[in-house]
Image (cartoon, rainbow, N blue to C red):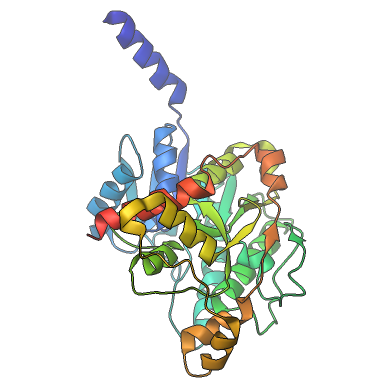
Length: 356
């Protein structure tokens, strides 16, 4: 018994750290998985939220995400205002800047300007507080979106940037691109001592938290709903939220990660009908209505002028995007811990369990 206690204490000592990490946007899906992994690694975790009233919700989600304890400090701060950020940065060693505006508006500037200004606000306060490094959550869309099928026929790397003047680039990915560029411009100024690394995940799947459908899990929800007989010829690159969280922590702790961008993916895309087949094969009886047939492209083009969602799909029809995660593998020694099949099936099972 005494030996067991001594062993437990030594294990705790090996995982404990006095380092404090601030995670912006603590109510977010990726942020909560990052916080869970940080807590399990022994870090002191602080997070920004717009409302302190959501603490119980966040702690419940952290437990679902696998956190062994949920002792997180909450600070009220918003990307659109200075209030709270000095307090949030006080005594912080590292920042995970995960928060990003998700505003529905016909005016793209309503999304782009807060994303840029919010990122610069976080970096300014982090730099002033003497934070060592910021890990920023960008998106593969800031690299590989905004191009037609011919222009997309190659392997994308971290050297690529999405063309912000392209009409094919949607407002969300434009905001991610411009926010990340603003971040690099900031840290490249001579007076800035702050280090930066950016994480660029592809489509984010994984077990949902608190019964809330987030990220690309909306796609699974649509396919599991039983009301979609067929799917368009759209190709999806898959990443697991838990692998993404792990990449953030590796980018924080790996000295050579400073100044680098990291695509997080399985390095290929798959058509929606193939995703449907994985779900149908893996879920048994509950997956029998998952669509595995494909909507003819000519039909989508025909009805696109009348159906907004079809019109939005047109630029991505038939595009199989490929990307390299060699940078993450070589520098961070990152490897996906979850196969595509396991990610999709587990995501679907959790969604079905919470939507009975």
